[in-house]
Length: 350
Image (cartoon, rainbow, N blue to C red; front, side, top):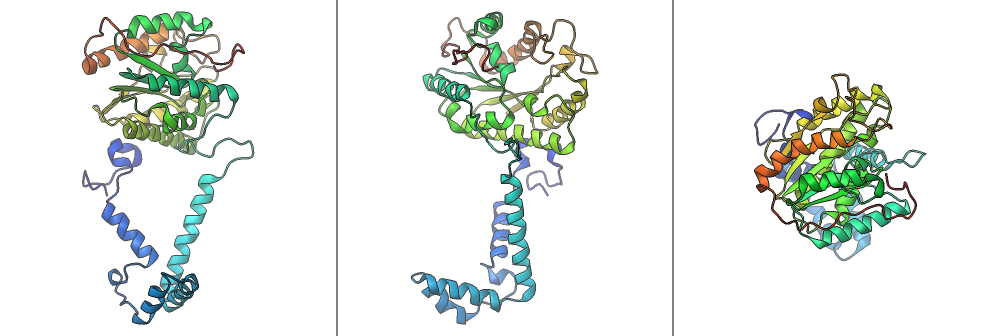
């Protein structure tokens, strides 16, 4: 039961603000009953014989152990079984969350994981330095699709010129990084890249690398959706005054079989928006047809990364929102200068 809206919600059928909200009193009561710390709530009367043992346990660890054993033996068998079931389920949940597959890939998009290659570590340091410079009103975060738009790499120079043409005067900074999965973006946001930035607008595009080129099942869809929801929660915690523009995952044409997976994730993402603090932006119908096939000139030969024409479509959708929130662009710009691939090796970074 949602305490705010007085009705039951499904995970993807309620606003983001309700998704992880629970009554603190209810949560406290559940934990107290689970650990047996409020016997008066369950109808049991405190056993006065256990009080000296509990008092003694404050200074004597051996007394603490004896009192715990005595308390367990003195409870009813149903309560003991309930406690056993509680701890067994907790242990089972913990192992399922922390388990890593044999290939080393993260178990869940909701768990922050750093990219471990040296170039990504250098890029993270570079982005931390950019964040410390300040002067950022619009904060873009994402993977290589975001990064290429505002990067100084020579091969992306036309995209950077497009970036400047569309966004100069709004103090926009790009914090995208190539090959990042949702969990990598989540880790970067939780490890300094948004600290102290205080942007007025955050633009999020993430998830295409988690989707991959193969269709996914319901579990995969749900995991990616929850991971992106975790990114939004982190953005709200780090920049509580910012408006968040959640961009729908773009199509990928290297395998059209992945399109239904992308569409289902995007339907879930739409439910995370409230139209004010979190706005959902889906431009896919301007990039591709109803089957997810890109229109001519919209995608690179890799059939994954957008072409310049597609970036302009994205910019045309963003600029009215920027104007509404920030006003028209100024004649000067105070954002940190764009950055590029920190590695000397060409092609690294994505």
